[in-house]
Image (cartoon, rainbow, N blue to C red; front, side, top):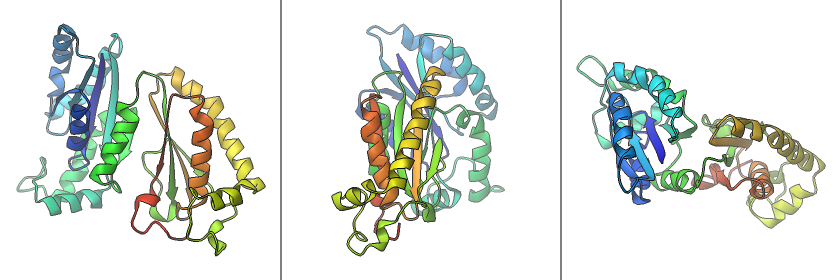
Length: 292
């Protein structure tokens, strides 16, 4: 049986993720008290026919003492035949404040003496024990509901076994480094197609840009070095039961060089790893076609 534990700060998209999993056949429970997780697992393990896929949400609505017990509860579960994965969703503080202001929902930790900003910061502290155990962290700050659903579908639902799921993510440094990346590589030293008027408005998905960067020795060398690094170390992570890995590659705007490298590396590793995905963070933004 596969058990997914979904956690994260309020407003980060946990309900969207849980609904997506339910749409794909997962038996889902929202806001399960952490102390009841062992009894719940024991109960569903006796279910006939067996439930192959289960997802539960555990978040700050739990009692604080229960949240502190989560690491030991997970450790006990890991000794069983149950395949357990923790997925943690989060977003930047300003993004969460904006979402609560727009929805006019009450944060679960706000009181007459605790305002929204303080509640958001306190929630991160309460959930830190769970965040530290997460095999997959997703920063939803720049994601729409549809984009989050697609990430959950491609990275989680389509993950058929316990093998490593690899994500290559292109991004622009001018918009910040992805906080959920496991490895970050900087491609800003490579020749920039932006300064060619014929390539400026294109992206790393266009053949003209691919042809341009494909003839640059430095681009080829960086691609080879990243590939060699990952080929050496990914098996070590997989051997230590790591389920997810996010490799982020950035250039200035996330339009040309980082996109090109992510696509090339995806093609290379798709023949070696069963679940390889690519995400171009900046290309989904309305202002995507900026200097990169």
